[in-house]
Every structure is written in C-alpha cells, then in structure tokens.
Image 1 (tube, rainbow, N blue to C red):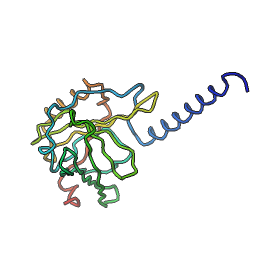
Image 2 (image 1 turned 180 degrees about the vertical axis):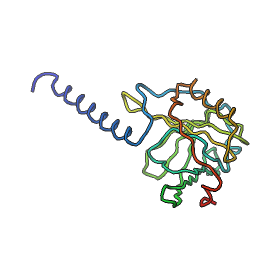
Image 3 (image 1 turned 60 degrees about the vertical axis):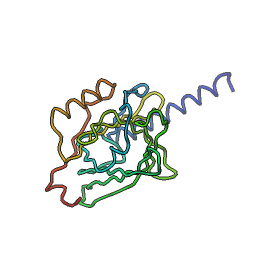
Image 4 (image 1 turned 90 degrees about the vertical axis):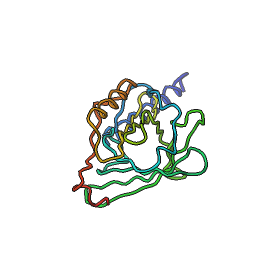
Length: 200
C-alpha cells in the first residue's frame, strides 16, 4: 500500500460518515451549524429546587426526538444533590399523547446550571444548560452536540403558563442570539387550551 494511503482512506471514511449523519439530521429538521458548539453563559447560582415543577414549551429549535405539540416538562427532585427527574409529555399528530422520563444530572457542582439528560441507562447524554430563568415565569435552556466539522443546536423557551409575554420572548431570543445560537429556526409550540385538552 502507498505511504499515507491508509490515513487518507480513514479520513475519507470519517468524512463519509459525517456526511451521512449530516443528511440524516437535516432530514429530521435538526438545526446544524458549521464549526464547534457555542458556549453561552449560564445562570449563576442556579437553584434546582426553585426550577422544579411544570414548564410549558413556548418555542424550540426543531429536534429529532420531539415531534409533538402541547409539550410540557415537569421536573422533580432526584436524590439529595441538584439532579432532577424530568417527565416530558406531548400531543402527537394522530391525537395520542406520549410521555417519557429522563434524568437531568449536574456534571460539575460548581456550575449547577449545566446538566446532562439521560433518557435511558444506555442512552448518550444530551447537554441541557439553563441560560436564563426567573423560576416563577420563564426559562431558557440550551444544548449542543459537536460532530466534528459541524454541531447540532437545541434550545427551548419555557414558561410556567401556556403563554409568554412577547417582550420576554424577544429578550430570551436576543440572549440566545448573543450566545451564538441560531434563533431564526425557532418554532412555536401550540399550547392552545382547546387544542391541548387531551393533555389534561
């Protein structure tokens, strides 16, 4: 074999794998951006105990694993530290409801607003960073996964109520954008009371 050919073949294989993954993620409407993940600032002195309870999803960046409307996330304490259990519920297009449970685990006690969410013992973790919250009204969460030449972005605007004041929503979008997050692809989540009645 020619010198260096094996390395070139491995590089081509890696690039082919990356392109295949890119095609799959793009088909799922996942938000992909060239380069490394941005690292926006998170909430300082994050208090997980005040974050507990029910949140309504107001907007999000599209994600492969979440396709429904009327999405809620209910957090409860898990263990004695800052870890939390999260129950996600959504209304699917066929009218059925779907629910799944994850564990949000703090990765560094000095930065409790940075968590990783596991949806099963064997699943890969999904980063979940709380960028802003007043605990009683709104929250802004962000996640990102690097895939070498590009990265996938995740973002959720949450509210304690099914609606959120427009100015607050704009402020949270501006905060995301200032952190290098693509807000142009944020999509609203239907939280209309009549539409979501099956979620009660």
